[in-house]
Length: 221
Image (tube, rainbow, N blue to C red; front, side, top):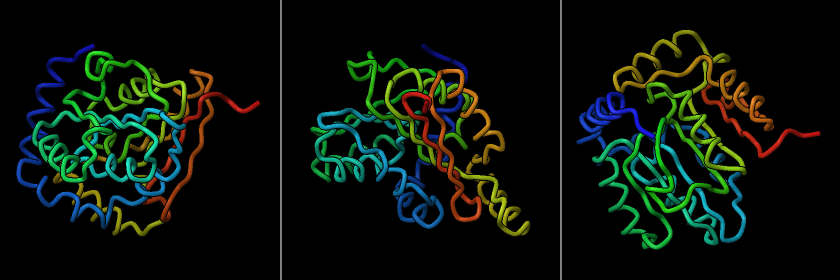
């Protein structure tokens, strides 16, 4: 699976954006990437299970998840070589290199078997990455394709319960980093879940600042 033009172009863009920012990324983003820790706490992989993160960035979420669920093994992909350099260093410092493996790949089209020697995972999660990925809908499809378990997603909502001035300021700031909240995020994922015969759960957090979505293994009867 590959998308040469998109992958190469977006990879270069992300490397330029995060070449220097990666060193302070976790310190600054903790104040506005809300809902990540709740999503991680709800992963609950089975004993000896496997978890994949699409758009793993600095490895912050993988490290937190690996510490919370010490019985599981974790994998992550990111399109930016710069971010992965930080991720590998952070994972090594945390002493988790034996349980966390990361690789460079495009989240819209990747070969998990070639990257990690396995084609399926018990859980997949995506944290504030879909708002940065061109063709993000394909990342949702890719996530569903590599698990019969659940897919967990947290990202910017539409700030529907917040003042208009706040939305304007937030979106102007995010645009500087090539981030765009996806208006059709919930609708698209719900449609893909329905087509796959899976359950769909949606929670709006902090007056719509963030949306938390879980696609289950199958529809409730």
